[in-house]
Amino acid sequence: MANLDFLGDDDTLRTNAAHAADEFASLSAPRLHSGQDRTASVSLLLTSAGQVEDVTISRDWRRQAGVTRIGEAVYEAYTGALGSLLEAIAVEELPRDQPAPARPAQRAATSTEPELDEDLWLQRTWGALRAGRRAPRAGRGR
Image (cartoon, rainbow, N blue to C red; front, side, top):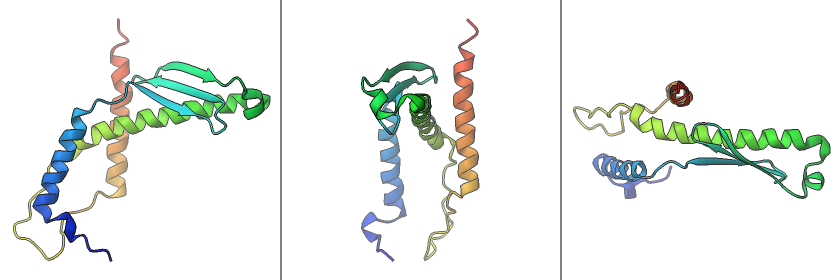
């Protein structure tokens, strides 16, 4: 097993993580999210609200994707951009969703803090994604 002593003790790790989270929080999320199909025939941009902003089709799309596959290429570019948007929403929401770590009464020889299990991660990710989907609808009542 690799030796991770160079990372420091728990307090140092928590402090470094808090500084990194603060630094990340100060960065604004990208306004546009891009996707491209595997043949580079279609590129697509989505806004942060999930609306299609732009679609670019390569001049050489017939040779790259082919006439029968251009629809698939558009869909592939769209799903790539949507994945980027959903990832940005999840990354933005996850730190706000996590409870503050409890300090153990006494230090144990090994860490006793639970890892974020897959079920909890999925629950929080879906919660962030649902919250992200509801946000654009709120502005439609103009």
